[in-house]
Image (tube, rainbow, N blue to C red):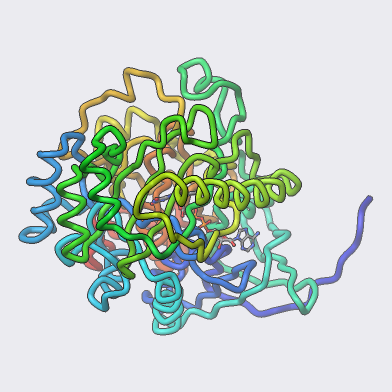
Length: 480
Ligand SMILES: Cc1cc2nc3c(=O)[nH]c(=O)nc-3n(C[C@H](O)[C@H](O)[C@H](O)COP(=O)(O)OP(=O)(O)OC[C@H]3O[C@@H](n4cnc5c(N)ncnc54)[C@H](O)[C@@H]3O)c2cc1C
């Protein structure tokens, strides 16, 4: 059935950022700080997306080392003395987390942003709101982008729906930070969903189109960490090093006692409520008796974040899973006896569309740490997808970082659109390393500054002088 709608004019902006999540907030702040008129559109009433309301860990600001001793002495301890040597993300993302670490509302390592940063959720949102206001960004909440208008290869306006009905907003430059590349898809940018046939052949997925599972990282309180650490010391087979935030039990205890970030896993073995999934990931929080947990039951396989019924099913499934897991922990693991759930985020979608851009980042670009002439951000997170072919899973990554080129944010077919966040132009495998929050924030900032330059120079983002963009980002503290 076809409908005709009328959209009322709702203003004209230099840069319209669609999606006020992890990448979007930093795109908006980055652009507005360059002096252009910016509107940020967010479908919910909360800002920050997976970064704040999703409770994802904020990672990874530092290089990776696989070896626990090397990691401790050459990354974690280095953060105390020469953080610049090991950090891979600076700029506005660093400014944001540092503001919270210094205020005691986020946990870092030696007062710095290291592998993981976890926050007081209310503060994480409030600081973002303040930074957006300070930069002069106008934020339109409770507003969803549903259509785009184009003139040839140029997006002239986006159509949104909110309490006022359909509204049309004109834009010189548009940034898609919806996570799902909604705007790019509406504008006719080519994309693939989940894994490609080629990736199936290479062993990165079982079937074409397979997307990473949905998940939820939920918040609990009343943990007795002293009892828990004593139990893990007495039962070393229950303690498992976290794969990405590599810490021994001694490192974990020391960090916890110093009021710093610690991450680890507990092996539930046959107490697990889910066959084939046994590890509970524990991330401490600024409140000493709190934690974020992710474990068996907190994943929903065969998810499709573009299917409204599947996402809705996932919402119930994951809430249920979190309650079941909590019951097991209460009953079985000392330290969790009195634990109480305080917050379960909405279903977390890890992967949907990947746009096809001017460059498609491949797994080899990530693992080799290849530098690009147009690199605008760095990462240090290993590839977080399953399955991974064994030759990739066991690559020795020590003092490792990778670079992300500007071209992954430049979609084919549309001229005045940038795409930042988890849906950039990358294979599913490469996305497994690029989608962490710190990298999305850094890419957001780069997209925002590029869009502002395009407005001021009356060019398309593809025609912006990328070396001038890199110089500007570096001047603002970004690590390229
Ligand atoms: C369960 C789970 C655990 C994770 N754990 C970690 C972790 O520990 N560390 C880490 O670094 N990363 C983690 N990640 C990954 C990371 O959180 C995401 O990849 C990243 O935050 C994505 O950022 P984004 O800006 O692309 O999307 P989002 O942060 O999701 O932002 C998208 C925003 O756009 C809005 N939006 C969507 N569509 C529209 C529309 N049509 N109109 C208007 N607004 C719209 C949404 O409401 C949202 O605010 C995890 C992800 C999941 C799902």
